[in-house]
Image 1: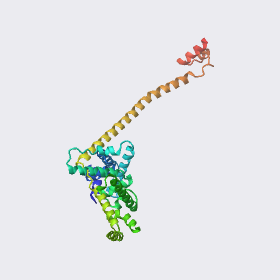
Image 2: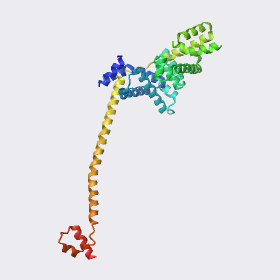
Image 3: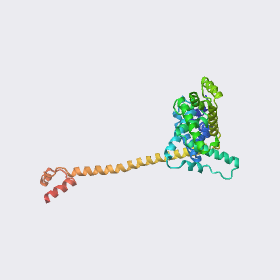
Image 4: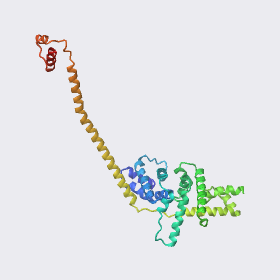
Length: 182
Length: 147
């Protein structure tokens, strides 16, 4: 039995430590996926919390035919999409990005890194959400094409083409911001 | 040039080490002889690196766990409150409905009693029959005599 299944069994037997262990193990992965998709700090934490609440309420119905992580990433993607749908047209993405990236009193080198980060996040925002999600699962979370295809319920060929197109979008956008980055 | 177009579609997957061996070999072979495709690969790998190098967020170990349990406990409290209120509503509905039903039944009973056919029955006949009169029959017979 792998560690995740052990924690799930613990939780289903009424021991909350099982749930705590799952949260601690995956909280930063989920936070970083969400943050890369929406680019906002506080909202990312709220969405991560929402994801684990769904896990808490639905863990009983989780069938161990797939890996727990696949199921968790699927919930994460869907919860983030729900958030983006709700927030649509309410907040300007650029304003939100800059609000979450105040760069006061930071050394020059760190400042450059920070600026590059902001630029990459802005460029990521311009990538259509389906391509962005696929790219984030690949480059931020390090999943294989096969794992991504399970999370997103699509073929490996689709994953391949989405990643290819996401990188083309990113390249075009980064070139627009400043060609010297490449 | 046609080969370049085909290879470029494979470059992203090549970069991710997701190509089958045969394709991998084909891409490597092409890259050895094509400067433009090597440049394209370099750009793609730079982009990948930039995404990888992004600042990673990290939460304190207990932070999300404690936030979650607080929220779960709030949800449970809310659920209990809702079920308690629903129970009280049901009880009060029942408590009110008993006297209302009793009053309604009394009204119906009185209405039926007052509608008894006493009009064809005279006071003299009643006295002669020797039966005891109820308050209602006596009242209606007297009223009839007066009319």
